Image (cartoon, rainbow, N blue to C red; front, side):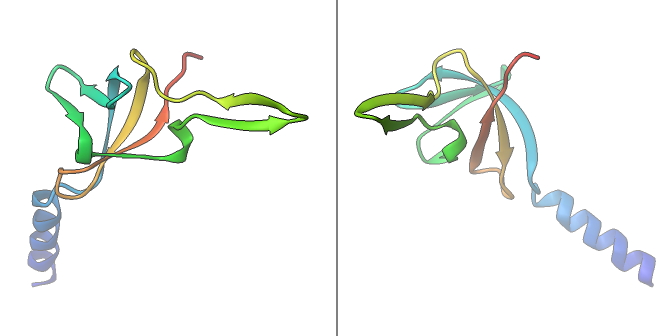
Length: 97
């Protein structure tokens, strides 16, 4: 009986599209559009952007300095698909080692 319940719960989780990671390429920075493989392009409310990929500037002794640039066309990014598959979080920009 316990094994049947375990199998049923595992099947239910796999059918709800739990969080999954994928790679994407920024096609357009404004408005943000990200191509995921050759399959589809994400934009608008389908994307949630973290602070890690946003431009960040600070003022130091009266001069503005760029600490981190925002996303640009051609950037490769790491995405997390949220449960249900309707929303993707842009976690970070990928860099070459």
